Image 1 (tube, rainbow, N blue to C red):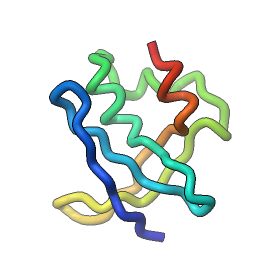
Image 2: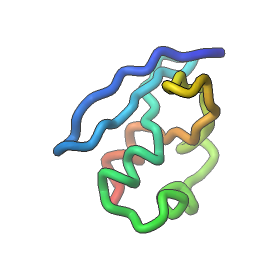
Image 3: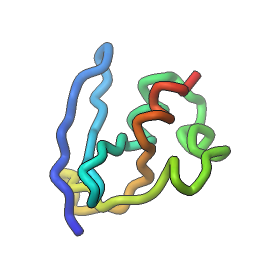
Image 4: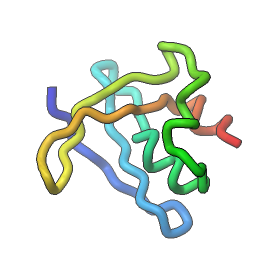
Length: 79
């Protein structure tokens, strides 16, 4: 399933948002980690439960890619 991407700006960082099959927003974890200055983007989702994270196909300039996404409640609880 290919999902439309809705980009938005957060303090100069682009955050990509996609919607899951239930219409719930999912945020590209790499974008969130980069915006919050995580040293390693993989540190962000490491401790999340399966219902808080997942993967979705995201259209990028270099083609469709499977990316790790997080749900909205996780977004608001990121340190």
